[in-house]
Length: 300
Image (cartoon, rainbow, N blue to C red; front, side, top):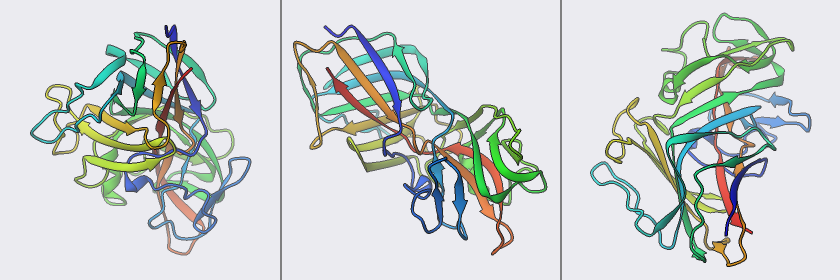
């Protein structure tokens, strides 16, 4: 039987979530790129580009994780999700905090071995909050929005904000930002907690999105009724379904003794920023927020 479940944060190229967190901007060589030492260079206007990268720490809270023999039904604004074809791997009513620092490994509790079989689908129920700790170096001059300190480094501060706050770029932002700071190499990162309350303006569902392990969908819901929310600052859960086929379904064999969940966090942080003035090499930074991540499950 399966004796434990472990999670492994990886740097594999996986992605999830909104078009606001587009894939690969730090490596496209045109708008921005990240070198082998993790230093980012912006090469022009960032309009339409959110550069995503690996944070130093990335904390999520997991309530449920399950494998399914048939596809679960996604929730809507009037009907909750249907997971009757699924068997729980993890069921933690109070949630488990998982720190996905790149390359780390930890054991999750409340684990149950599913029956032997082939599982083409899985789902995860988690809090819609993400704890991000990051400090990043740039070749460009990065300035704390709007009249704060400047330098070649930016880092997170101990603070909390909603994702929807980023939709008021340059208008509703606080000057100086309380969420991040830019300056010299001596800056120390705090933990910024982002509450994912919208994928984009008035968008509370996303996907299916193609990832390395198949396709994934995500819906912002409330724990009270399991319904998709219709307004910002109302969700308290993220419900995500992953389709493993045709890539590689999860197979639980009689000899299986370990279940591994890998998280791709190489793009799990992204900048809220813009170029000011147009054509200059100075960038206004408001936050280092949540970027995309995804999961890959296997049994051995």
